[in-house]
Image (cartoon, rainbow, N blue to C red; front, side, top):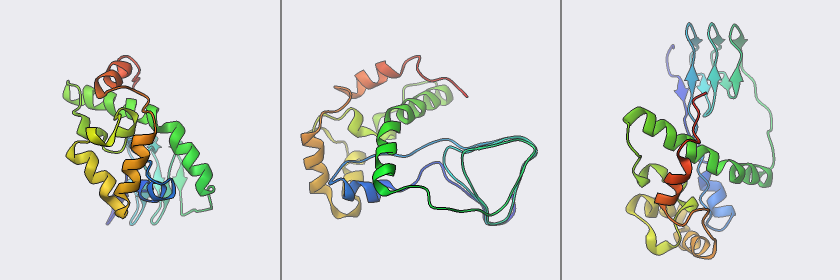
Length: 178
């Protein structure tokens, strides 16, 4: 890597969708995997969820995401992706899978169940009400000045799991290293 390179394992779109949706926190965390014999040029940005194969060159100023085929050269690119509504729906669909992956990778790395604070962007999956928030989750709601709206959203929507423990039980055996 030369000079300033940015490797993101998250994005902060949660700040936009949280306000736009009137309080729903939708996390966005994904690993970045970089193969062997890869050169990443000055000012390149590698977005969350990117896998770069072996023997690649990522050119200076590039923004790359997705699966970068091994043995390839990538330069600067950019284009509109989708509307905010489409993005919001896509983020909603990916919440559970991403949280399961975070759980699995943490457990694989540290040989223990992650503390619930690790899921500060995914706590809506297993937090039944605003009265059940730990400090890390409350801090996430305080971002961008619409904490009250977030609390109302949390209190009026049913979580996917009745508790953090039931979420952890669900994740067992569902994470497969790719």
